[in-house]
Length: 148
Image 1: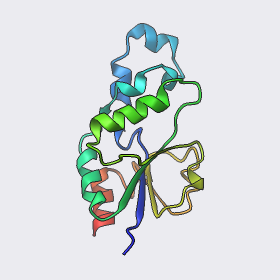
Image 2: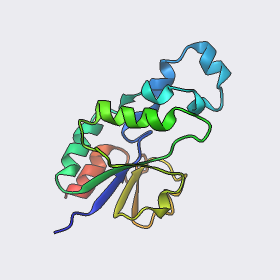
Image 3: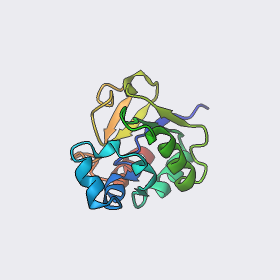
């Protein structure tokens, strides 16, 4: 039997973006104000969202899991930093299962867990699970929905 496919966005779903910002010097934060995602190396500084690894592990027992993320166009290290972050924090769960695109709507799957409608998330052909919405305020609500 084929498992249904889940895509996970990184920033705001698996990755605590603000934790990387907090590690930047005030000078760098000022220099990149309004475009903080363009800071070279920022994605390597970020911490996992508490409970994210455990949620992925649980879902991976029942679903085919992938990461579907976007890399800021003007950040030369973002894509490689994201891959390294996954290697460091996700315990091999996404080995060769990372898709980096600005067009998430082009990927085929059953579910996309994303906290943002940008980059094709709202047009995703499967079900967009909007983390942070009233229906899905947190990862626990998503686990309950997908594992019930």
